Image (cartoon, rainbow, N blue to C red; front, top):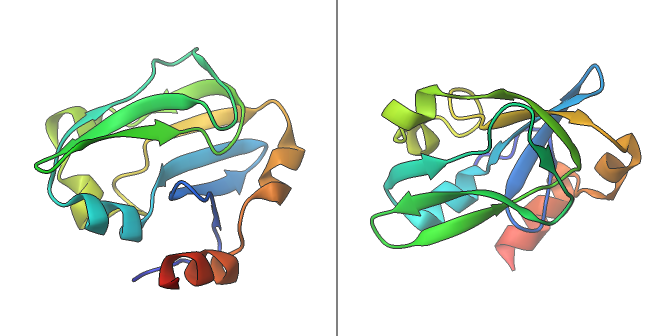
Length: 126
């Protein structure tokens, strides 16, 4: 399972890449693998506020529908609209093509509470 070193991770299997006070968010390779083939992705709108640990969208696979939980709080400033037409990107490229939202952080210290790549690896190997 791929666990890029430049990301932080939530216990709910979202990844976060922080750049210039903004957080790019998606789901991990482990999460997409567990869910199976993704057929639909529901995301918030630009301008929406998301709150730490609160649902911000969902992914639907051939097996189940799973809520997405915000790994950070803030205002959504970008949404990956390509996922509407190509939800399979989540399976094919969870860290590159399948980023989901970009959030302007309201509390940058929340990132410090996320798991490091090493801690996340331990979590998924349990």
